Image 1 (cartoon, rainbow over the protein chains, first blue to last red):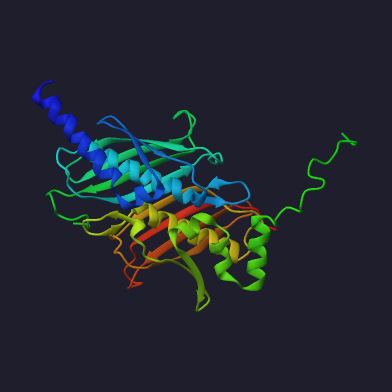
Image 2 (image 1 turned 60 degrees about the horizontal axis):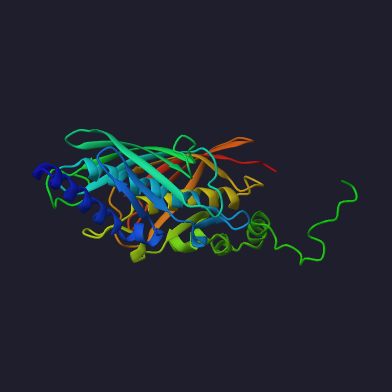
Length: 154
Length: 160
């Protein structure tokens, strides 16, 4: 393996570890399936504590919101050359159909554009097939220009 | 079909449905029951109360809500979820719907990083249709004039 490829592998490994250790991601039970420049995939296992409607057992929309926000943020980290703080500017979510009770939800996010200050993301939440999504989101993130600059808005 | 046996015969009567329990809570003026019947609302640590005629939803700070431990700051998803819950509670509390509102779209603007303290939110109905309702929401911490996140959402509802 070339030095560049090894460096890239370690960088993505670091991103993955960093995102896996976010306290709220851990509280949700999120598992990171993959993290590459092209796409990041998170898996949210079904958990009764995240249910929105106890009659149907369907997960609350808020858990899907948090999953999409977390996956999108990780997709931004995956394209950054260094691990600088980021902050969500906005997130728009379209809920296309309810999640099915008892089933894990996956999310796949891509950072499709990065400028000096801002990163743009797209993401879908789904059970089996990203082409048959539960929810679709677009987000924008502020990217700090210096390491340790804090996640607060510049 | 007429002589089909009721498969539920002999079983204990089903617990009241969520919407029935929410309606009972509304009639009784029991705000907190709104939270207590929704597992995810308990997970977030929500409480609901009425102040000066406004229904305020509060997310009590907990370490499990953190997104950035270095600052520390709340996870953006928790603020989005709080805002969505505040809007749904508002719709149920004002009896704007006889079914559980279904979120169609939710758009959140993050204005400040959320400090590790309690966060409050409320929803304001901007247009009430028979099937679709528009709500805008705001959330704040110590200073209501400095919101941490605002949002607007569209819900599918059914008016009684």
